[in-house]
Image (cartoon, one colour):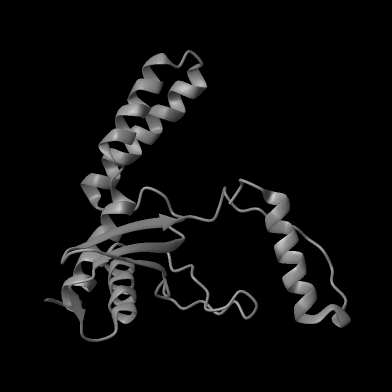
Length: 181
């Protein structure tokens, strides 16, 4: 059995969060370069060039490529031969907290969708944990922006519809949105 050092989890989440916000993956950059070379519309060429320039600046200055870094989603794959001593969720959220501060990420996460109190540190993150065989740990961090992907609906509910009315409206809206997040 291998013991999991939660300080290492915190450090890794912090570093991965900053990297994810400041560096486009080379595969993505290559596709953008390819698209720019094939784009015939001058406006389209300009937009793609700006994205590439933005990536260079973000990498050099270690600043986020986009002001909307949104929610942090963390995927953990933890081997069944790993012993966890301590609060794994707290360690992950501390990594998000440190990454948000040191990476200059906009503080935009609220503690509850109805109260809308900003946590001022981008926690809690969304954490998905999967137990795998063996004694290894894999961590993937993905900032999930909310701007252009935001599906919304405006509808007035009567007070009599209460919490059940809210739940029904949300579920129906999600179903109607389909593949749009």
